Image (tube, rainbow, N blue to C red; front, side):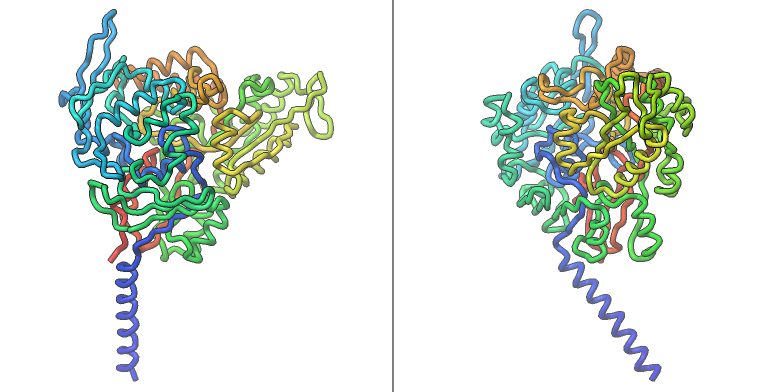
Length: 554
């Protein structure tokens, strides 16, 4: 009897091993669940994480920051530097210095239609960016490019009008000149006529391990192997990004195995992941990756109510952010005093603190003239109510929960907040990007190590119709000192001196509160045991930039 039982157990083990081997061989499609659908597929429009998570399966910037937060080449062959001669200081006259930075593109890089990726694409991408009517991101970078010189088909030099500390960082996504140029014949209309949003499935738009083969707006994006990819061959024949905007539904789909993996960013919330780990501790690999990402609330500073610093400070003093961190995130997401993560070397710990103090919040509101309370809502002497609209991404359970807690805490001091949430593609593509919100909007910023806060805090980066909605200073923050500090930090090469400028930037931010910082986020990764090679970066370079390393375990 014992012998037969032993043989039975061995047979089960063998069956499991064979099944797993068969699974490994047959698993040629990976289905990933994410919560947002891109507002655009053009790599140089809209700063939206969902878009880059998707496009990084099919494209590569020239350089990126890896999981060790080191700047590395992706589309280039060697990182140029002053030390290795790849970057040379130039004399611009009148005591000004620029820098000439030379990059070599991967020699075998091809677009998906077999056309070589060349310096023509570099020149075209720069041409589009430098045209003020194009409306692409990073207008300041393109202004700083004096010229681009094609040395040969694969080597080019960028001549920059100043020497910045990150002079060799080139997070530029190239656009195929041979396909897209006809769409740029009328630059003012390029935003709606570009190839990426009108001919998304063209193979020649992509040169990464995969290319987009099918899209269903709001539902999914399908990728197939790019036969022209020159690098390490990816494991999966097909990858599908399924968009499930409700995070509870996302978790349910994962448990039912209708999706294989939930993206570590734009996936389940941290509280969901903690709960999930307690229920299934041995079934998955769990990674809680702290990174350069912070949840915050943008304020429309053109709103007279929010233009008053006393009101902005009252809004923050009225929030018990520590309670939110402890109860919703088990302390994994610490309260933020500013926009710079403590994980960086230049974080300033000596900033003004806005600990929970509802009594002080009330005094500030009364000083600002919000003294009369009618039906629990503060009014000013003109009888106007202290009422603000508050939006975020619909379907994100944790954001909507936090939003309701904030609404309740503000209500306790007489501030009425009206919740107006939208699908992510509308929220980011229209409401935030075009400053259509009148009060408050909650979302997260993720950055690269040492990235300048120019696009979010410099006054020249306020998007409006006249500049084609370029820039990410959505609050409309204007401060001459901040502008000067940002201009200075970018060209300060000495690390110690640069840290001093960073400290002043953070202090000015915390004093002015153009944005209400909430907490520094940690991204939860729940990875099935059979899926290997995913390495969270903790910065704006998504894990999909290294998708060729993902594979099924044997």
